[in-house]
Length: 440
Image (cartoon, rainbow, N blue to C red):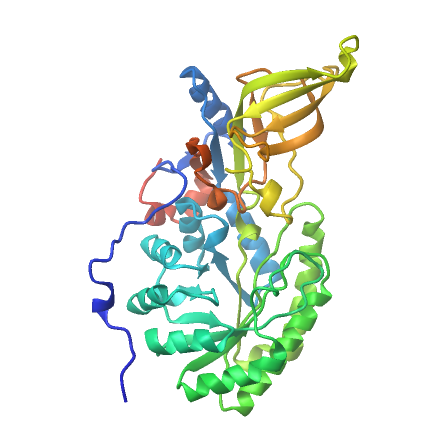
């Protein structure tokens, strides 16, 4: 019988360079002596303004990631998070999560490469993409990344050729009708086809270890998780009848704790825990994992952008009250603010001025445009704001999810720099010098 296990020569001359979209500070700024995130933002804006060409930037609050991690283990103590690298591939965020002991959900060769280069071990990675290029499967194999998902016979055939020793997780399609971002139309095997796929995996001599699903991002109904876990239980039973001994359940991602979703996360956690205890009790030996992305990083990043131009449009020249002020900033929907178009689960943008604004200062109907030459690059329309001036900075909170990772190079505008910060007590408590390799 031919041995299809991967061999090292498959990746001869492979580059080990890791590409990250956004330029990031080489050092983490440690907050002590009572300094706050706002102090850091103020300092960066002063630095930018002093050079006469203000740049956009992020401040990444690593303590926010710690807070979310502690909330996760409190609410979902049985569920180990595997952070979705696609959500935000900033090195400091990944290093922080690595220090906290999470795993990593990777969707490509480059994401696997990044996670490994920042300290993750192969067994801490799930290659959670059901339609993988063969070269990426081979790369995972040569790096010892064995756990990966599938949802079709064609994927099984590729894996049997490129990574015959893989530990496979069958992804099933579940009801995602209550979610703002639905995924089951693109990914996931139907329940009706699960048995046939498992039989084919057995014929190919492949090892299937678990089941995964994803109810979508911005889920508004807890019952979706209850039904999905019940569907997964059915697949476990089908697999058992075929001789497989499944030992892993992956409940996906899409979690958030911003706005109304804060209460929903607590409610969802209770439903998830109850369903797991009923259908996959602790003594069952089944490991439970999830693939949260936005949950960990959404509130950690604050974006600072600069007003580069303005234009006033007056509908009635005799009435100043009918004027609309259009502002142009140095970031937009082709950059960090792509959530306006691509992420329905992102909470509403609420930019605010960095400088102080008096309560009596008048507000004007305003439009905020991005920097590119495309009229689709509109960040906000018909918002009421005090009059801004060229050179003013606007701040956007909760900008960690699907912002950094969705930046395009359209018009070749500059990318935002990222400045990671952490409290001194967190730095010491987690021994982050070991993970980051610097002290200030």
